[in-house]
Image 1: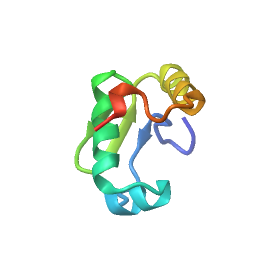
Image 2: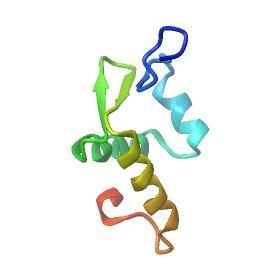
Image 3: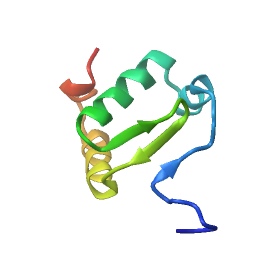
Image 4: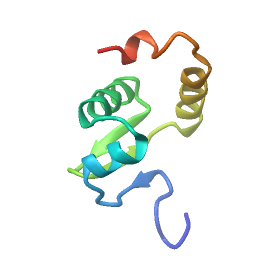
Length: 79
C-alpha cells in the first residue's frame, strides 16, 4: 500500500473514452475486453469508474500470452 492507497484498485475516475483513446482502441473494444477479464476472474468492476485487479500474477500472464499471440486476439477477445 502506497500513500494509503490500495495498489490493486484503479480509481482514477477517467472517462472510458479517454482510456480507450490512450490504448488506441474504441470504447466497444475496451468494454468487451473488460468483460473478458472480469469473466476470467482477473478484475472486478467497482462502481462506475473503479477497477480492482483480483489476481495480478494471472493478469500479467494473460497479458504476456496475448502479446505473444501472432495471429491476432485470442478467441476469448474476438467479437
